Image (cartoon, rainbow, N blue to C red; front, side, top):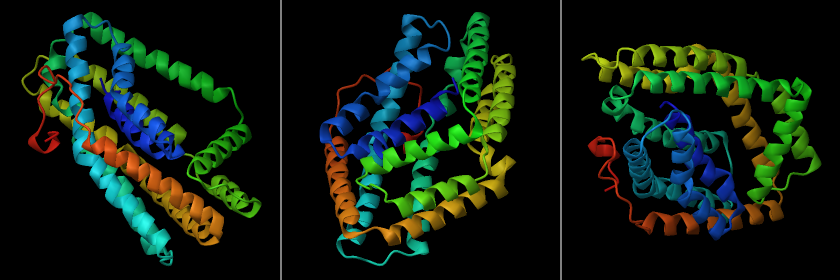
Length: 308
């Protein structure tokens, strides 16, 4: 289901960028190695799949995960080496460097989008029963209700406070314990950042409806290209429906990253460098590892999305 897109992107990128930022080798390797199992279990909740279908799903996620390990982790390592070199040599931080790093991170996301297993899932989806399609639709509704309930639990001010706390916690994992003036900068930027949550959720709801409608035509000869177009459409929602807000928010945070980067004291820089080195060491070990997984039942994949 389309959950593969946000789920795998978040599990793999955030596992590295957030959970892995503890700098603890065991934490990083354990979290990353369990990402495929976590994704599969969440995927199974979308409908009642039989044992054969579950094997296909698991094999496809394993294949994607192996591709990510072999083809993407080395790219992450290269970027972290740039950051590491910049810190070690005291290379002056500037807007161009910040923007280049941000663009590189976005390229990681784009790579994942281009190898999204859903792009090759037409044959699998075409075999779904009408009952399974209804279960997927019901799952969409329940998840939406759950998210709305969770969101309505807090006021706007409370949500902003929670976001700040979460951000400070993530930065602390990176070795960056913010001082009062730096926290003030983050607080101001959060207040200035225009929320896109409602815009995204509305488009996500419409996309879900399109996906269910498309499944009704899953036996049609043009199902695969239409599916691939719809999957690609999902990844472009921000750029398509609120590009000005997206660009303005990105500029705000790029400027904030530069401002805070220039205010880091010697200890903050040293702590950050230490974490970067640990993370890079762990990613190197993960990239070299070759776990034994059976991908014989996986969805067919494009050549450039092959693990080897």
